[in-house]
Length: 242
Ligand SMILES: Nc1ncnc2c1ncn2[C@@H]1O[C@H](COP(=O)(O)OP(=O)(O)OP(=O)(O)O)[C@@H](O)[C@H]1O
Ligand SMILES: [Mg+2]
Image (cartoon, rainbow, N blue to C red; front, side, top):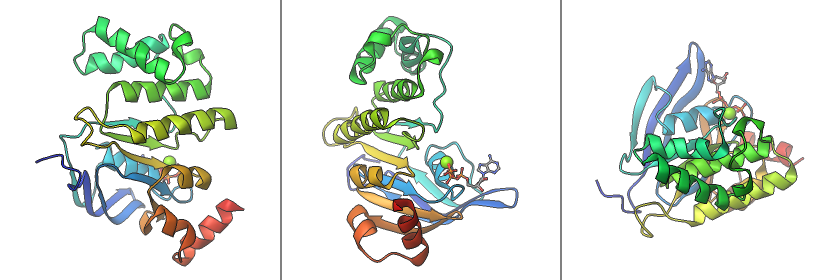
């Protein structure tokens, strides 16, 4: 299968995920093509994290069909970044080493990635002692260093102060404007969940609104904020924007 931009990266048909009796996703049908910047929005418990985990291959599905182009490399940032009890540099290097890079080279590439997120100065600091915002940036460097074609981010700026939020957002925009390891013909795809509609406006090209696990709206970003919406989505946007 070619990785040509017109080919879907992910194709979900009627995907359902249940935890016991709780429906986390209900019959979700969705195609994502390379280069898209997709925002997932919806109330707590609407299924955003579950959908990201399905896309990352981490959540099993009970029904429906799921196809992801395995030739495209992907990386995921979780709602709370997990840092190992070692330096920021080693945290980034380990991801590369696990993918087969020699440890010496992995350490060097980790430094470059940390520089890119503005953290070269604290490369030697134990990652567990970094602030939340710094840890999120280390996690971004860790994902970045892997040169993924697809980046999945679960509320990447949820716990950050406004300054750190802006920094991480700028890094996401930078990342979205770059291309994958396969070259300029392979734009990076980004899927992120967010409760921050301003951020959604700034970063997304397409918005998916989930409610109780159902996909209720799937629109280009301009239409989501300016066009008519299903009632539930309209009330959500109104409420979030205050
Ligand atoms: N591992 C699990 N075991 C049981 N129930 C789960 C599990 N993961 C998710 N759920 C349930 O599935 C539903 C969707 O959860 P999910 O975490 O995907 O929502 P979300 O939109 O990411 O919410 P939030 O905005 O709070 O992060 C919720 O009802 C949640 O309680
Ligand atoms: Mg979540």
